[in-house]
Image (cartoon, rainbow, N blue to C red; front, side, top):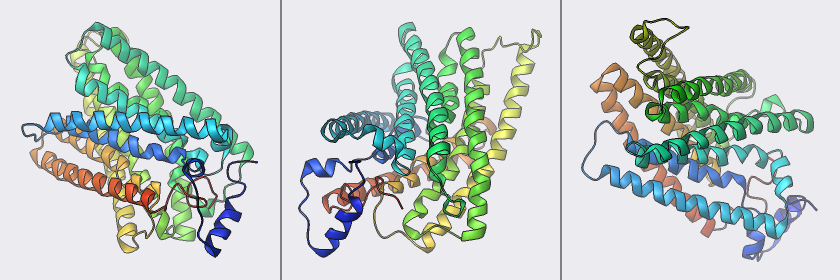
Length: 385
């Protein structure tokens, strides 16, 4: 029997009489969506590491957040392994029409860990650590490209989603490959020139792939909003996902342009310095263009959530953290590139909001587990909407 075949019956029984569900059974409902916690924590750690306005001890706080998030990641991986060992439903979870879409946050968590490793340990590290980051980057690119291809191929052949119910979570299988560009923008500056150029080219390639898929999904999403209106109040926090792809693309383009080696030459031309500056200007202009799109999606989601706040916690609440972390990182990157203190001041205020939202959602997450609002039959992403 599949992991979710009896959930409807269990949920019906739950309405009739109180249920006793032991930890082993609750572990059956520990889904891939839990990795939204660690992708958000990892993003917050990276955000704290690049703050334009700092104070003594901020870096140490960011490092503590990074280490705590690593601990959370290990705990989540251990719980997922325990789930699959006890209940044996790994393939069911990946094939599920709803839970399967949340396989992406696992890889997004890995992406934030790679970026955090460089931000906190890699800037003054030796050659061996630089090589390690190269290996991790190429492994990440390979795994996430396969994920985007295989998962969408399966979805296209095995599931039928109605466009009237389109949600931003449909983008999640393409989100990890898109962060290849973000990783490249972070680690390229400390790589040897030949390796840096290769990494940046790959980053642009996969960033473009991920954003292109997301952009095509946006057409369906806007059509769904025009035809069917806003999602129900419980699903509205997921609307913030749409702010992520353009923001991370802006961040990646500017970061990769700035990470080009000084001796970079295009098509053998000798004017390396001029070409580098031109590419950086083009990246900044494109970044501002994309940042505005991210701002629009953020505002639409914010108004929707404020008008009808959700009443029950779901792990999709973490969408109010991670995509907005990318939006804030893009603001910081553009503020530094434009040398604008006003923009950097706004980014600092945004960062404070991100920290507050992270703590709020983390509190709600823990409370939901204690109150049996999640990890409970019929209440998680392993049941269909």
